[in-house]
Structures are given as structure tokens and as C-alpha cells.
Length: 117
Image: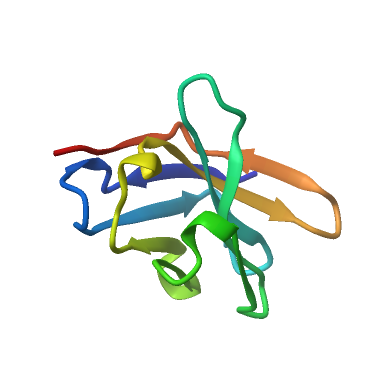
């Protein structure tokens, strides 16, 4: 079982940057696909970015070219660098871990990101 704790959310002006981090505990995240999802008020949760155990990555269309996901298995951490932030990026961001072979899935508690002038 994996426990996930996010950090790094906050408020920023349009065009600014934030870096989110997610630390896993309980087991190594090495064999998990790790992802960031977000949910804005009144909207469905959507994929932001994910990184697989072989370091291949996948991004949601709204964030391509602006966000970068990375992982550090030694630190049991996955990060999301968010640049050129827009008001529409405002949402609660959730860390996700999936072990593909078993489809065991875990979520963090979420961290708020607000982009506003």
C-alpha cells in the first residue's frame, strides 16, 4: 500500500510558476505509474500528467509545453513543474499511483493551486 502526500500548492499570478511534490511512503513507488490529476469546482477530475516506471510521460492537452512531470525513485517522490500558469489551471491537484500489474490505485489528499491576479 502507498500513502501519498502532496505539497507545493498555493496562489500565484498568471504567468507564474509553481512546483508540486508528492512523497510516497509505505512502499517504493519504483514500480508504479505516477500521475497528477486536477479537479476544478463543478468539473470532472482530469489528467494533468503521468510518468510510467520506464520514465515515459503523458500530458493532458491543456498543459502540454507548460508543465513537466518527473520522478525520483530514490526519494520516492514525483514532482510537477508548472510554468506559464493560467487562471484556468486553478484546481485541486491530486497525486496518483497505479501499479499496472495489479491495478492497485492510490490517491493523495490534494493540494490547492490558485492562479489569479
